[in-house]
Image (cartoon, rainbow, N blue to C red):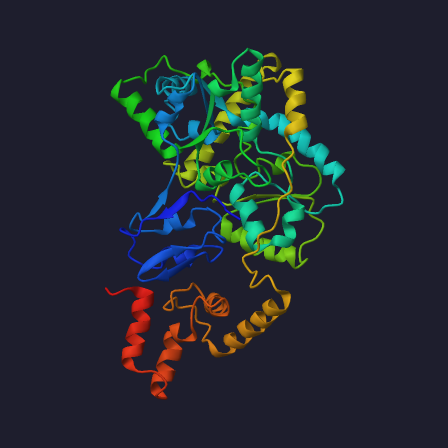
Length: 445
């Protein structure tokens, strides 16, 4: 089965330094011939490798801004974290205006759909009260993490689409009701992370996404900021009072840590950071955690404010988001709130469930159960011989990973530097053979 990945390794820039391999939460990276190699079946596009690489060798592929001009109606679907990348003296209205000047005909904060979604999640939680804990599907990196590393928990995932998909449905329906043909509608998401690119290009549980394209937020932020600075657009008359968005206070905080949790029924927990989540899901899988109704899990520290495609400091971004929510709460007027007309709401409600999310465990050693059991026994035996120091010199992130690679006939026991030394001492391996083994892992250089 093919899975789209937004992350790519540029071998010309890669120095085989192991930083990415050591940071990957699913051990999806190996060093071969002196270059990092990505295992597509294990990668979850969380971006940990992107942040760890000191050479800029991890590339995130996204759509070109010029693609928007293939459509008459060009909608920029933006997350609230984009607004809060900018300093307080740049008002929301000006950000909206400059995004339109880049070529978009409309700008829409996807969290405006959060109020609608919260109501539906609460209904869903009541209907599926027997599933505990119910796990949020908002963060696509977490959905993929569960698929590959905790496949037994796929049944716990909330099967409702996130705000970006609901926003896309809303705009398609709204414009089609105005007589606009679907082929003239372009819906482009400005993404804070690589996982959302992968998810929208290859949605889990769906055949295709309603979103037309995905554009790097870092690129858009810099385009907007440059245009504002070059044209000296900031002045005393630009104030938050010119707010264009009709987003509610609680919806504006949806993508922050606890943004979901605060609106869930029963006992809910919010956890951010992919490695924290890894540890916690192990406890859930082992049934060490009980009486939790809902889990809000976000791969990035400080949730979307810590997305790898954001320019600003995540803590300052969260602070601005909270200040903005406080401001909105002060001026919030029920008559000025974003509302969805009844027909469109009914359409979204009928189409907001995602399909079944299937496991794709990275630990499948063989389709044949008998052979898989033999390989598991081999891994256990190998671990008795390996030093368990997880040095990475073998080109794998851990001794366990090397044992699994050997069982899958993707590596040999001689890859281990400690066993090489022992074998050479006993005459079972020559110095030349050791050098040749290292060349296969680390390259001729």
